[in-house]
Structures are given as structure tokens and as C-alpha cells.
Amino acid sequence: MKSVSRRLNESPVFANNHTGFSLYDISEKKTLLERNANRYFIPASNTKLFTYYASLKTLGDSIPAFHYQISGDSLILWGTGDPSFLNPDLPKSKVFDFLKNRSEKIYFSNDNFTGSFFGDGWSWDDYNDYYAAEISGFPIHGNVVRFTGNNENGLNISPNFFTEKTYNWSKSNTFSVQRDMGANLFSYPAGKEIKANYKQDVPFKTGVEVTTALLTDLLKKEVVIINKSLEKSSKIFYSLPADTLYKRMLHVSDNMIAEQLMVLNANVLANELNVTVGINKSKEKYLSDLPDAPKWVDGSGLSRQNLFTPRAIVALLQKIHDIVPEERLFKILPAAGQSGTLKNLMKTDKPFIFAKSGSLNNNYCLSGFLVTKKGKTLIFSTMNNNFMKPTSEIRKEIIGILTQIHEEN
Image 1 (tube, rainbow, N blue to C red):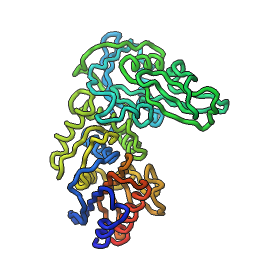
Image 2: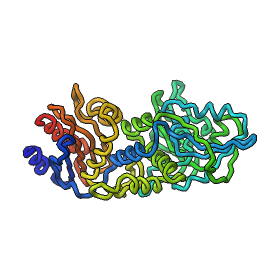
Image 3: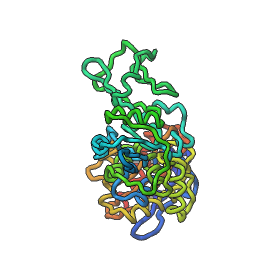
Image 4: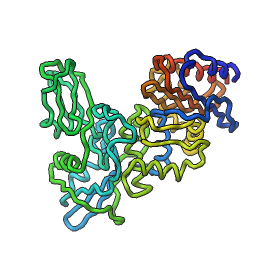
């Protein structure tokens, strides 16, 4: 490891930024290499590893879709935070058919949602970007409107509910859709070509009125707002296998699913829908033994207020490895050179890095598992903050170091 340590410490690529690194041998139960492993870094989407672990410990094999109670000719719904209902990027569940085919009049209560639509420290000017979909108690369609081009130079809009709220009145020089900051009014420039392969997801403003209006439109029957506390006697309807959400979250770094998983965790741990509550309960229940206490504020890592140390992430990954068999785990995590956000990270016939990346401007982190040539599984976390070089240079050097570790061990 001496040559790797020297490269890590002397690399000109890391000369002007903050770099942390930790490498751990699972079989020998010892740390092999560290650099600034006890210092705190902004983790970006490495935060999703914490969300994954909390969800593994809290949620069962299937995701709870909603709470419901039948009273006479009425069916009362409460959300759980499940992000899968009519989500265009997830398989269909039985939830829609269940609600569509009920004979009772449907009422919806948002009384158990106590959180905020944005996470702590989120940038307000991300509101129009797909990765900043709002957090809600009963997500619908991923909480985004999907705009796609067609062969007639037109625009398809899904859910169709938002078609009458979309206008061709913006003054942009290039074609894109922009939502009003505080309202569900969408606009695009008139007279601009809409390519057939055009696709843009724009978050819509959430709220109990929007939820019930959307449900009414989609189910083709009235859904009425009711202010009612969640009943202990309510039943739970389940949607998708949990691994379906985990794989989507980790493979494409889906922020919306990550945030909603922490809402789901809060639902189970505290009977309320609130990301902060889910995080605090998870830290208290599952993470009190980490070597460095995490500052963990959202489910996705979009916030720059998150702060973790490399050795704490390694300890977390050890916890994950303890409860998830490698065969399953290495399918859920992206494989470098093969799948997800790491598909183009390197070229290899046989992947040996299974990890989660995390990127924000001037920050890049990569944490996960490395299988050596001799077949050993190592845990690593490399965290890089405050660099001015192109991210591609940082990534290339990290892969060079990890490949060297793979070859020499």
C-alpha cells in the first residue's frame, strides 16, 4: 500500500483541493489506508447510502403505499410518502386499480405530513430542475410533469392534468419549459422547433389541493379533502418490492426517491411524514456507533449542509455488507464500467468497483466496494471537495488509484 499512499498524498490532481480517503479489509477487519479519514466533507449523493441503510433497517420487503380506513360508504386515505404511484420511471403497482375500482367515496387527509416541500439547504433556483422534485406525503407521477416531443413538432404533457396550465408564452432563445416559481403555470417559447426526442421533467408545486385535484382527474371520480388524524386502526396497502426503489435510487441517483424513502422511514418510525424526523430517528436507532457523528439533513445529498467523514461512510458500508449478501448488493449498486451512473467511468470486461458516486459543483465523492484480483472485498470511501479542476480529472485519478489497489492485492 506504500505506493498507493504516496500517489494519494502526492498526486498533483489533488494538490489544491480537500481529499479524504479510507480503505478497509472486510475479511481481516482492519483499516489498510487512510488520509484525512476523520475530517468532514460534503458527501453529495453519497448521502443516499445512509438513506439506503436506514430503509433496509426500517422498511420491509414491500413499500407501504398508503394508509386507509373504510367507514360506511367512505374510504379515507393517508399518504406514507411512497414515491411509486404512477411514477413514469418505476413499474406499475396495483395501487391505481385498487383506488379506481373502489365503490366508496374517497377522502384524502394530509394531516400526517409535517415536513417541508424542500430539504434543508436546497437551492431555491433548482426548483425547475428534475432533480429537485418537491417532497410530499402522497407523491403522484414522481411529482414532475414530463414534457416530450412528438413527430408533429408538438409537445406531449403527462399527467394530462397540466396541459391546460401550459402556454407558449416564454421568451427563451432555446426550447425548454419553465414553471412559474410559485404556481403550476408552465411556459415554452413559441415558434421554436420541438425535436421528437425532446424530454424534460419539471417539478410541479405540491400541496393537498393539487394532490386531490390530480387524484380526481386520474381516477375520474371526486376525491375530497378531509382534515383527519391518522387512525391507529387504519390498514396499509402495499405497492412495489423495496429493492425496486433502492436500485433506481442508487443506479441513477434519483433524488426524489431518496427523499421519499426518508419520509417512508419517518412514517414507520414516528407515524408522521417528515424527512428530518426520519433522519433523526434513524441516527438515534441505527447509527449511534459510527466513528464520527454525521451531520445528515436530507435524503438525497442535494444539500451542502450534509457532512460525513470517509471512515464513517466505510463503517456504514460495513453495516450494509453485514445484512445484504454481496450478490444482491452488487446488483443494487452501480458497477463501474457497466451500469448506472458509473457506466462510463472506465472500461473493463469484468467490473470490480461497485459504488455510489456523489457530485455537486466542485465536489466529487465515490464510496463502495472494491474486489481485488485475488478476490478480496475491500470497502473504500474517497471524498474530494473544493476543487477547481474539471471533475473528469478528479474521477480519472480516483479510478487510477482504485485500479492500482485492485491490481496489487
